[in-house]
Length: 205
Image: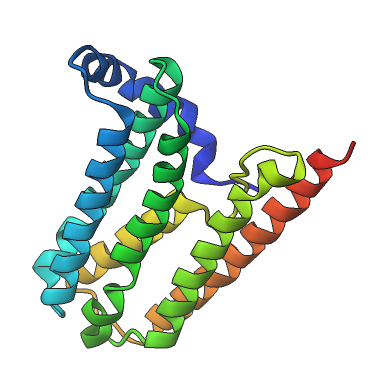
């Protein structure tokens, strides 16, 4: 099923010159991964401490875009500049979970003044974690790391970026927020199912 992951090759191509320069300067994939984690934690803290601030919501989309760029760069540094390591693989996957939690969970506080409920956001976060967990399990059943959609990591980031931007512009909140996040959670659950099915199919010998 279609997902933003499908445009990853194009996105990587735009970032390849920058990645090469970072490699020349001795920047490692693990350092970039840690930078993405710290960026996400900083955004989460800002969201948590500025509940109801439309100004803070303006920065969510750009920060999420930067995080996605860093995620692409660390992968290219690892694969294309001989930096693949077992530690890096663990840090990369764990870092994604930490970054997701650092951004999505503070939305419970940040979006509460706009009418967003706690349960839909928790469900959205949980289904996102489940989708990534199932994706990681691909190699365990003889497949590859699965990125099947819908509502993969990039899709979830886009959704959060759009929602926060709309609210930052002054659009009124309300029950529609719960509908959006419940629907996104359902799509993430479908994505997890698709990843499991494809991994099992690929793993058949």
